[in-house]
Length: 70
Image (cartoon, rainbow, N blue to C red; front, side, top):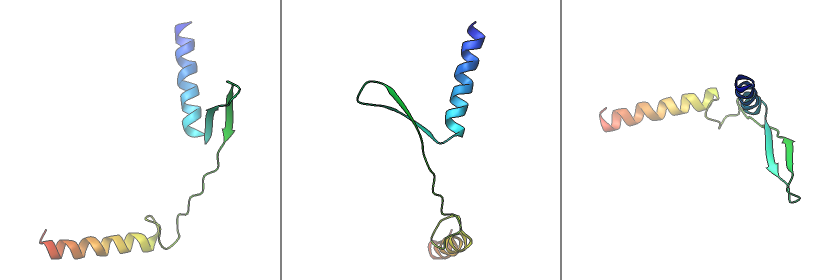
């Protein structure tokens, strides 16, 4: 019985981390479960993970290394 409850907790935690769900307390003292939406903007010119962002960051680091003598 204890293994089953631990397995339930592990599966529940994995589900909550893998799926964009939010658990909130409603004013009526009940649990509300809502599905969130993620808006990732990868590939835009000013994002950190875009090609332009990576090149810009690499240039800044190279400049700083030359300026500070690292």
